[in-house]
Length: 65
Image (cartoon, rainbow, N blue to C red; front, side, top):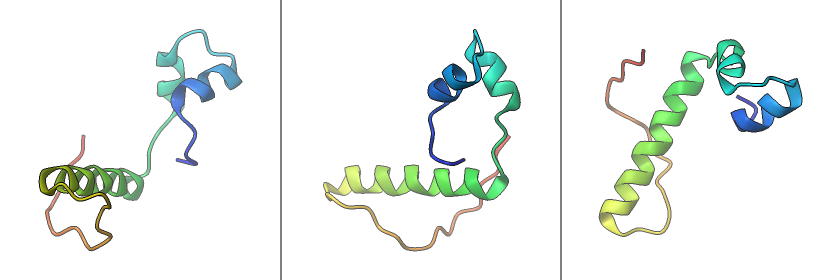
């Protein structure tokens, strides 16, 4: 959640497999929602050909598992 990719965390922790790192890497629900918002903003920008993403609010209800 601090912006470090899992592969780097895996190496720093000395895990042989990324699956072990994933076992301990849990995202907070707000962090997951923010990630979905960024992905949706990126998708919208690609569809419209925009070069920047919007920073507005996200109106859809998202259920993450």
